[in-house]
Image 1 (spheres, helix red, strand yellow):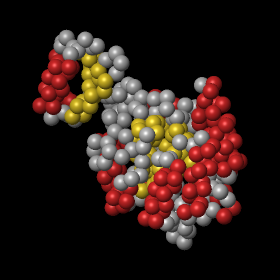
Image 2 (cartoon, rainbow, N blue to C red):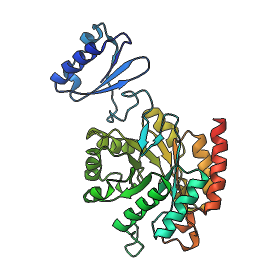
Image 3 (cartoon, one colour):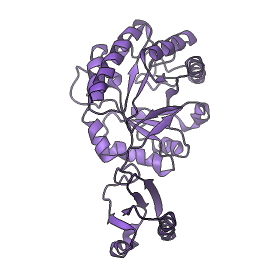
Image 4 (tube, rainbow, N blue to C red):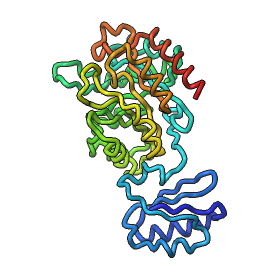
Length: 332
């Protein structure tokens, strides 16, 4: 249920109403907008008399929410959420570009890449320390050492870091990471999501390989229901019948998620297409569709990359992509 309060509602009146709701066992999510205050009620609202509420002087409207996702719902929070990731803001008109290698391979590789993508205009450094791979024989990442190397690159450049977590037991290793990524394979790892919800760390939640948008929204709800509002969606393509590309890039997800939710939406053209030649046009298209940021794989020498070399850009290619994305943003 959502109660929209009139602009004339005083702080004391709002607190009194919130206390009344809480005494009925409801959780209250308050959203302060420019013109009104919105109270989102979570719990068994069947005991709340809508007609009685509408009779209060401070109430503008009261509506029931049928969707199972509540806190991620734009009805609960009409204004865009802005998530701060180590000083880099995402959402609400703030655009971020996360760039770097699929896997952290060495000190030289990650620091060189960090400097090159920063020079090209990237605002965050991405890199995998723990790598979920389809084959158990593929490179699995440097793990704890990879985290340490990412933080060295952060110290050298000032770029906030985003990297993927696979196990809730690893959370202590991520205390200095600015944005924790939940990969597609873990989108419905609910125990992991709940543990992330108990932190205040920003979370980049990637859409699952075959997940619907409703399932993605519900995964965000798992995180937010535990108290962490700092969630960012990432569209990275879904599995379809098409085999020419690695996945099928669902660009329509960007405006749909913005319509349904107040959370920021980032697009990953690297994983979505799996082909270096497609990243620039898809990065431009995602930007035009309204994405709040991009996540792009960049490697100093993709031919020698230990993972995902075919979809990694060289620093020179990334510079070109950034120039084109900047042009697109200039006409939006």
